[in-house]
Image (cartoon, rainbow, N blue to C red; front, side, top):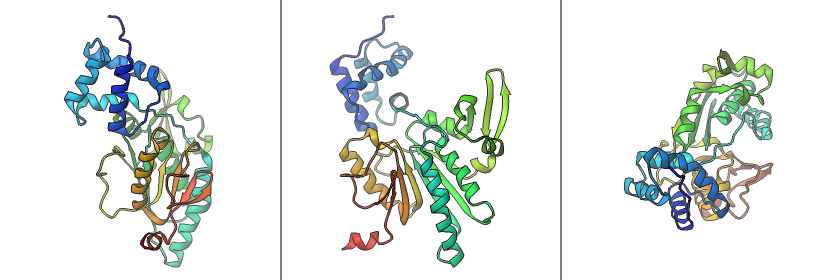
Length: 291
């Protein structure tokens, strides 16, 4: 069977559907990527054209099984352990000491909540779990819980397993690798499984950031939100809506981390920039909003 070629009109339809479902804005340069990633779905269903595949998706609807497969194919999931390490240095050197001091003064609970909005295969939340374990060492009775979400069900399943091949953990310092991972030798090579003490503090969920309702408890607010290398694929209008919503889920004084090639300039004025794509929601944010 000859591989189908993605026509201009078909790419337009699939690009519009991608935007509608995920908020991802595909440029013309992504045409070959879309064709390459969706070829296997056409083969799977025995379809001869991308128009036939588009028709299948629209007939099935946004909650359909194939629509989930389509989203999984289209989304990009590049990540590493300790990627953009200055963020984790800031957490261990600034955020955690500040929270410890506040708790010692009786100004705050020994409770920490974090959301990773776009966690991919889990390297980011597990890196933060290691960072928190190290920073809170010697400070008992801290209740730490991380929500890690992604739109892609395949990467969520990978993250929940917490098993990584040898070539995926090269950025983890050897001492931390020995401390927080279990090594297993297989016929394909070494594998490393995240220890339960890290995994137990993370809850993985499939969340589409465009959904009008997120499966997060009413009134929930996080001390930190990581939304790194996610909005780079969104247009300005979608970015503005997303950060306006994220603001409601961040505690006043809480911190937002975005990707190195992203910026809130022209997107949101609610956050104070601390440099290096680290932002803080001012303690007086409620007062400023009401003014």
